[in-house]
Length: 108
Image 1: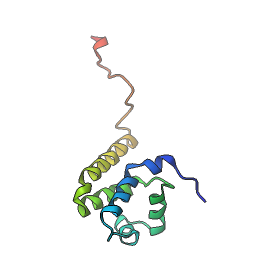
Image 2: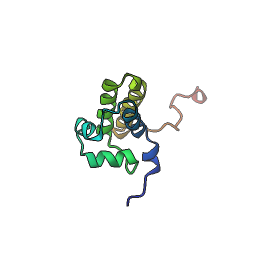
Image 3: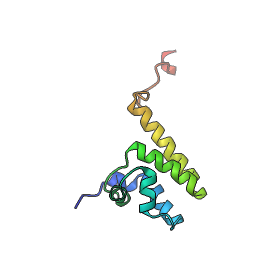
Image 4: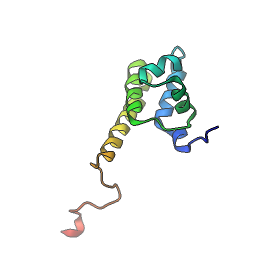
């Protein structure tokens, strides 16, 4: 009865997960969930796009997909980089993408 989250439905992590199932029919949610360290019911919610995966789960998914399916290496690498960027943002290492640098050409 949950309302689907539009961001979660379009997320890279969900697309990687669905593509992994498509390319590897032998990988079932029952086999993938323990590898990601989560419950199968929670994995089903991520798969439906009901909620976003936490960063640690996305990181484990990227590593798992990278190791399991060569055709997902590029997408898994993008997902890993996205997680790293989100962690930097959470840590305050990224202030804003819309602010001009302190030493712009206007100050010269």
